[in-house]
Length: 193
Image (cartoon, rainbow, N blue to C red):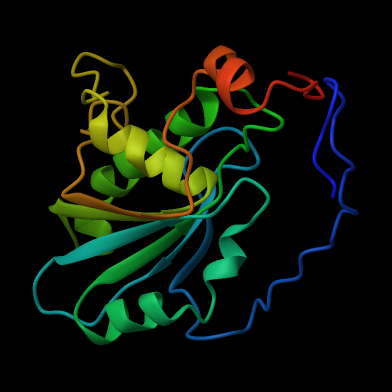
């Protein structure tokens, strides 16, 4: 077996190149929209056809992923055909930017979409999230965290609420206490940890 012993780290799997089909599924109406100052903070937006401001489902990929992974996604297609807009968000991953940076980026994306609700024809009261792996952790954190709105901020985006109507997740960790993780879950040497 490859079970780690004696405090040693288990063998590392070879890194796989992830390729996403940029042209899969419906094209976004808006692509690579910056929602913050870091180069990684970009989102794609698909606007559903609706006479009323539409609810939106915001997709957050896993830490090793990219917003392109949602191109052609069945849930995204389902949303668009059922009156729900969708966004796929890139954010800074936790293997390069420690907690709480990914969560703050996700909060900023929600605030940005709320701030742009009129222009993007979105219902700011009906924002939900879907996340996988780190994206699941990010959406769970947002769902349970206090509202991060700063009503007195000079930045109008920061004045917007981070509250979500609901969250959906898949394969996500549910905590961010790395000391507890090291003690109880993975008591081996963690590179950079």
